[in-house]
Amino acid sequence: MATNPNQDFVLKTIESRDVHFVRFWFTDVLGNMKSFAVIPSELEDAFTEGMGFDGSCIEGFGSTVESDMLAFPDASTFQVLPWRPSTDAVARMFCDIRLPDGSTFEGDPRQVLMRMVAKAQDMGYIFNVGPELEYYYFKDANGTEVLDRGGYFDLTSLDSASDLRRDTVLTLEKMGIPVEYSHHEMGPSQHEIDLRFTDAISMADAVMTYKLVVKEIAMKHGVYASFMPKPDEDIPGSGMHVHQSLSDFDGRNVFFDANDPMGYGLSQVAKHYLAGILKYAPEFTLVTNQYVNSYKRMIAGGEAPTYVSWAKHNRSTLVRIPGYRPDSEASCRIELRSPDPAANPYLAFAVMLAAGLKGIEEELPLMDPIEERDLFRLSRQELRQMGLQTLPDSLGEAVELFANSEFMRETLGDHIHGYLVKEKRAEWNAYQQSVTQWERDRYLAVL
Image (cartoon, rainbow, N blue to C red; front, side):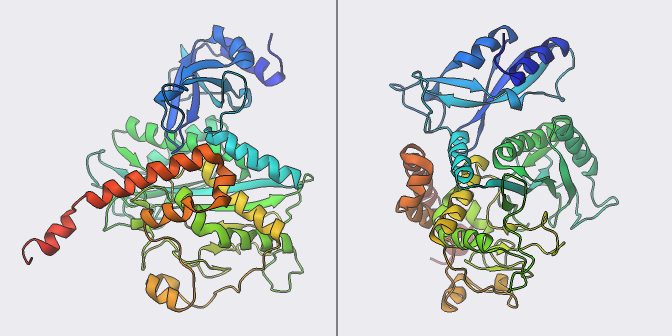
């Protein structure tokens, strides 16, 4: 028999819903979804003993010498996949990865986040996040031909993908993932669906599900969805703004202070947390913006901040304090605006939380806000002349800041830290060897 109510629920639902396959989901270090299918008769043993698989096949997991790993399904994440047939149905569960001796595998991103969440709980906090993920619909995966010419919040025929968004939202809600907003974004054929905030582990699972659902529904409609940070030079990049706050075990938002002398509604805990985010952002940018292409979005004049700064009203800063309901405790949060949707959400949330908690532990002082100046109009050079620290301007710079960060090594563990340094240096070196069309257009006929 199952050993807990969640597992018992899974086994009963499998029988009542005619589920014939259960997909075990987990991610590699870079956040790519991995899966293998298990038949229902194997589940009871899987809950207690795990299911073995070859970890050497997964990027960042292990070598052929150290390849035997076990996937333990998390029964609380069980959901029937609504885009599959209702007869001979297919369900999924997220898994935690362990070694044959039962110990935690340090290359499992989900368990890195679990470890940081546990640290927050030891300090008396629950970490809540609410990300806003942007993406594009294209005609197919071979180019960037858009479906419409709409802009922010367009309705009518300019937003030809409203049916795709509707189907996506309905599918997410069938899987128990509540959606707060969905709308057309700034770019042609660019869209955003915002998930209602919840605890970090549930949200990281939800983000992975969201990205898969967006792609599945797009495929069903005969088009292609992409979370590439900057798919074309002539269209806006796609971000993943991450709203975050800490609550205590009674559900009170510890970020909120109605008597904040600055008038921002922020407690001293929130200010220390924010100071930690600002201090360590350059070191964790490799995690929140992990590809060469990520830095094509983070440019002067773009929609992504490139400088260490914060404000309440100024949307050009790295961190913003949303002010829609300034007197509401429940709405008090900070919004980190640099991450992109190609990040691994488990690792991205983990490094943000680690930085914020470090700020609280060290009681870091908070720099002054920058409210009046539009920083988007300034180049990195001009920003540095103003005395503002900037985020790394390339993957090459990001990986070296990350490589030299003992804090990131401590947060992610030697295995993931070492893998990312090796993998991302190799990506940067390969990119540097590439000769682009821009270079040929600029130099070939004149040099």
